[in-house]
Amino acid sequence: DTRFANQYAIQWFPGHMAKTLRMMEQEIQHVDASLVLLDARIPLSSLNPEIERITARKPKLYALNKADLADPAVTEEWIRYFHEADAGCVAISAKQKGGANAVKAAIEKELSGLLARRQNRGMAGAKTQVMLCGIPNVGKSTFINTFAGSARAKAADRPGVTKGKQWVSTEKFDLLDMPGVLWKKFDSKTIASNLAFIGSIKDDILDVEELAMNLLDEVRRNYPDLVAQRYKLDAETLALPPYELMEAIGRKRGLLVRGGEVNTERCAVMLVDEFRACKWGRISLERPPQRDDMADFAEED
Ligand code: GDP
Image 1 (cartoon, rainbow, N blue to C red):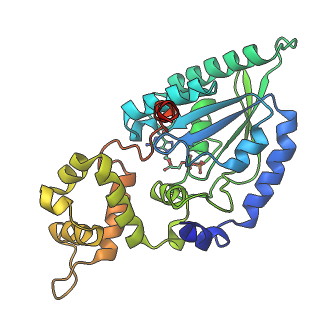
Image 2: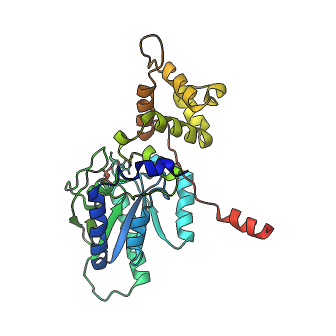
Image 3: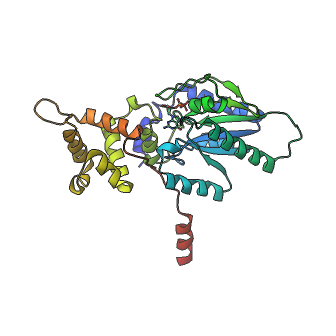
């Protein structure tokens, strides 16, 4: 079902994103490597195929950012998944207080290793130039602040704030910060929904009630206890159809309009906000595809 995705395609691929892709095509030729930030909660859905295409010919490190919001066990699985595909990958939390050194050390170690393996650099002392890219809201500005320890990049709670082109230097690296970029057409409704859940698609073009219902429906499959605990739901209520579940939560929270009906829009906004603020707990919305399953399937065949 690509209707959902197509419906939003044209409205939310703004001109500045097309411009960013052209800029990236130019810049990639001059850097040594790329660092692609992914969201640890949705590593594959936040993997922009356009960025993949542009960065394909140079060494690349994936950083699963916002690991503090994701399910640690699933993040471990993702790291293994990337490593099995021979891709450099590290989990970080750019925002965590006091975590700056950990983030920096992890990135520097992985990148140096990657570059040492893939190329023979004869330019001792020269800084490695790295292009930093990722989708909107993945944490690029926050990462730059953490990594470079400067207040040059300004983080914002809404997507689309990082604009233009800027270099940020550390002792070993020159990082080229690229604006966040999405892609024109999603392969699946799941990808579009996942990006919407984490706030990488501007909320004002989405139906917040549909977003909240889809989110509840998705999360209760893998984390029923977290949803039940957060909103004090019994098993029967938790199993209700999504709209009724949202109403039940709204009623519990006293989000009513005159006449006693639930204000479902306010409830939806509350749900999405609380999910994004990690109030439900640490949740991963995506798990690695099981390679073993495919092997079993082939054997049976
Ligand atoms: P950009 O659009 O890619 O530059 O993203 P920002 O750096 O502006 O970050 C978007 C939002 O994510 C902000 O509210 C940040 O505070 C938040 N954020 C960034 N990194 C992390 C992280 O590692 N953990 C958590 N919990 N939040 C983060």
